[in-house]
Length: 270
Image 1 (cartoon, rainbow, N blue to C red):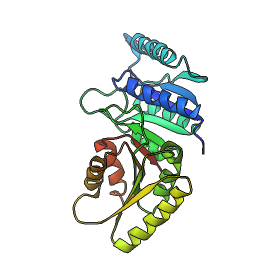
Image 2: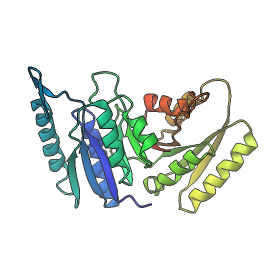
Image 3: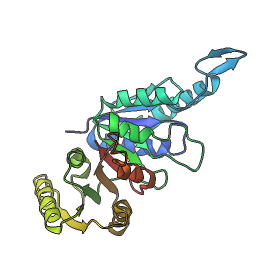
């Protein structure tokens, strides 16, 4: 799948500029259309018991977002700004998720716990699990105007991991080296599975190094984050899992943990 239609989420948060910068860089690189989608929490304006929408503060933020987007995208051949025009958590989640289904790649931001959030805390996780499209999540700290030169593939031999691997191909093609990391209960099974991934990537001209780690008692996700730091990775690619009800409420815990503790841009597919 070529990356020809990109969506980036915009709000008043301080990381919006970083997300937009990365989105514009990818749009240039892939000669893609870029759509900026503005949406954030807001209360209706009230005069006594009468509520009107949008409020003056939302209208002001919306105008500022549109102006910033149009200025930043002046040299893109095709760019469009849109407004969700809703302020509640439920409506934001629904509209952003619904829109995301019409794009090749969706660019969102990691939830920042350091201050008041402009969007629901679970925005990235909900969109990843429900939109059916690959989602690129940018950490709330760090500079990442270029990604995919040193990707790390978290491989688990699952449907979700296969989706993420293939969704990442256009982001990692031409990389310096791709690391494939698998956690396995049996070393030989992990090596065999990773060898198949390496062969698949080689057919796309991607040079790969394989690493298999045995599953042990302490946190797999912490070990994954340590490997990212050790290898100097600039992109993590992994499948996203969600809970499927009783008695499997713990399913998806790794997905939630990485979304909370990620240190580099994260490409997730479900």
